[in-house]
Image 1 (spheres, helix red, strand yellow):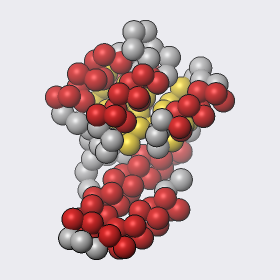
Image 2 (cartoon, helix red, strand yellow):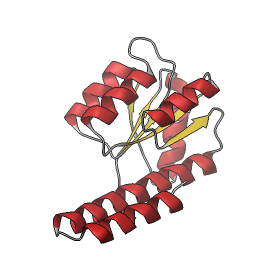
Image 3 (cartoon, helix red, strand yellow):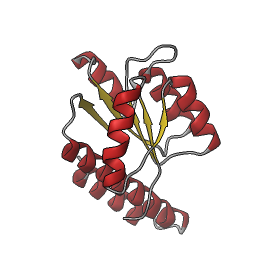
Image 4 (tube, helix red, strand yellow):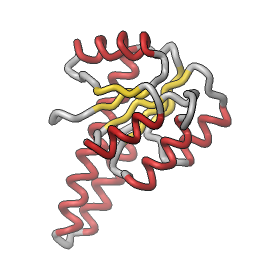
Length: 152
């Protein structure tokens, strides 16, 4: 799996620092943002591959960030990570196209596995796109179908 860029967005600065350090130890060092506004600015400057996004933040909340990201940057794989989310929030996040929805406190191995799954989906998207551009739409569809079944 090639190197990929992660953006961790959460208004709890100590949580961001701690999780960032733990991901760094696993070779997944993220960039960070502490508000939805800051996240959108960072995405515009340098698009990440994967975003780990809290829901409850002051200003632009995580759901609104997810809406804007799906519309403007559909390639970014968004993992929602929240302590305050509801089942309704989970349904909404999935409807809006979140790759995964996890609850805090999150098991680091589960988060790591989810990040790797998102990276695999990105690789499948890239490969499927290459086949589609070459005119092999059938192979592109097969790759995406396999990625959907494999990445959960």
